[in-house]
Length: 505
Image 1 (cartoon, rainbow, N blue to C red):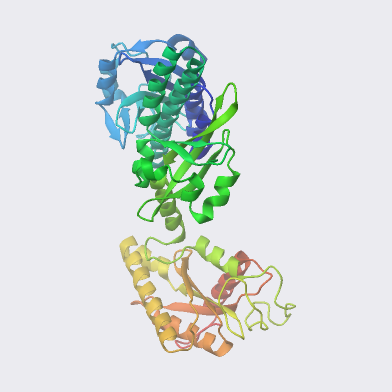
Image 2: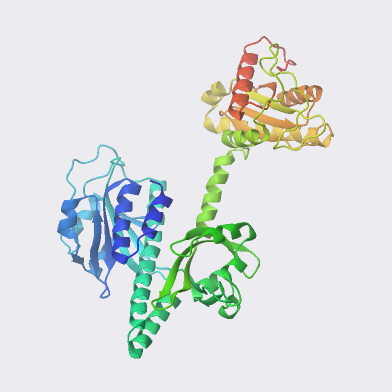
């Protein structure tokens, strides 16, 4: 189960008890631990075991037991800080065996590896409100792989604890609101108490909150917003009450908002700030019903997910760009090449040209800008003897050589554009470690051969020379097939006798 799936499960629970149990269950099913426990802070400050998952015996023994806040503070202030998580290895945790925090002991042998999980290791994920107040602690034990979690697993658990804190706060808020609505049907005195309780729960919610009218002339108009939402969007309450959510949504996301159900609907979209920028948020809808007249108000929780979206964009960028030299990766190259190739062939394949060495007839590709006589040249380059060079001189020297070759290729390609021989943008990527691929649209045969020769001559560093071949991409084939064929042509070219001026094409 992915982190976003585990988070989705805890947000679907309807009550506080269901939310807490869902947090424990999803921690076991989603993150590779055999046992998980959720400890909640009580009004008196102590923590109670509210839910467990993964071990029925431990659940029967520990659920409902209370540990003092002082003992918990001791746990959360010792051990190793894993970017918000708290890990207490068995070499330190023995001092906690005699305190009053409910705990279970995992039976098993000591680990066989340095990063192995010891039966007495402890890992805690604190849950904090947006104001930094502790509302609970998720504790996990017995990783399925028998090892201490790595950096990605720690970040996933930390993110999960963050969302769990929001889910608990929202569940408590829903519970408070439901109790307030019941009290509304009672006497006037109870009504005033309920309104104050509701006001505090709404105004001080950790997530943005908005209430919109349903039906009538002002359908969708925001009638009330909390301070968290106003700060998020940089607009005062008086200004916010002039709008509906559809007025604030990014134009590209308006369809998402319109398709989001009023009851139980959730979506991720962008809302506009006062300064004209946009922020990514997750909206969750619920209907506040009046017992006599039916649904009247739409309650929307607005959670700021801008930081998460930025992390996702950064991960996507890293997956598409080689961190060593800034070139496109093979996966990104295949995406761009696949976008350029049509599903139908350009023309019938030629029996005398199995490698696609001759340009195909004029054909307009769907994904690249091209002229009246369009062709799509694939220049496949390989650094001769690179593996032996790296084995002799070391990884750092090999990386330096690749960076230098990248600069030489870019310079040569820039010279081609400045000379006017090719005005269309080319795509440069590094694949399989020591191979480079250049996609050049709108290029005839003679200029393409000249380009291969220029790039092969330019990409030389010390004893390292480069072999280049020319392949013509054909619609009706996949990007993987094109790169496989050009690679086979390159490897076949390296086996042929050659002079210093020869270039395979």
